[in-house]
Amino acid sequence: MFFFLLNLALSDLGSICTTVPKAMHNSLWDTRDISYSGCAAQLFFFCVFMSLEVSLLTIMCYDRYVSICKPLHYGTLLGSRACAHMAAAAWASAFLNALLNTANTFSLPLCHGNALGQFFCEVPQILKLSCSKSYLRELGLLVFSIFLAFGCFVFIVFSYVQIFRAVLRIPSEQGRHKAFSTCLPHLAVVSLLFSTAIFAYLEPPSISLPSLDLALSVLYSVVPPALNPLIYSLRNQELKTAVWKLTTGWFQKH
Figure 1: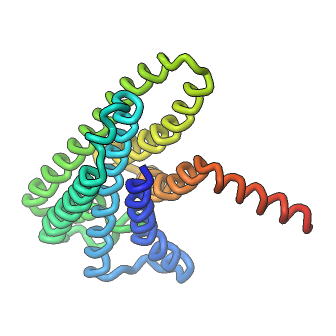
Figure 2 (figure 1 turned 180 degrees about the vertical axis):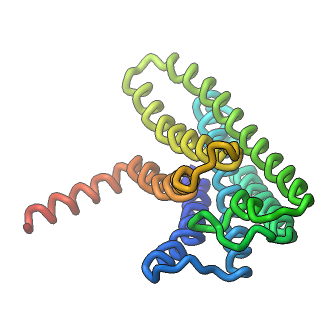
């Protein structure tokens, strides 16, 4: 789990650094400018880290499923080599998905101006600027990526159904509470990420509003990566003790 948390932390850091610094710079300098190459780079790395986030959350769910439902097979199914292979596959598939989406998106001619209605470069907003029929190719690839992500979400839901069935059979109330407190934050972040991302990418044009698009993009691109470190680090008792000592010490001094 800590090995996957390390990869998730790198993914969260990369996702935040891809969008937030440029958005803050534009806000402070009252501008909305970004170069063509800068937009392409931002889109590529955002796709990498978001695809990686989905893959890692799915793998971590599988890790929990095996540890709770098949504990005697944990060493066989999730040994160090298997974990390394799954992490490598997640990174490789994320780079491949990002490369295909970026190449397809920026091969389209832009004939509806060059102003994005968003605080960072993302595929749906760029497709709105294109009037070429070839955008259907990128739209098909985008829908395929969304269905893959939805497949991961279905796998996560199915795994958690099995996990909760196993947890409810635990005779100890303390054991059930510990299992639920470990799983529910992860499930909440997964639900927020998938629901907002799928709605943002499959939003019907008839209800598309700039304010709604902005809110959805913040919810799936900024909030989950920002919450993940807090959720998973506060599960660590030593860290909670250190934060408590730091907080009480500050209040005693002031």
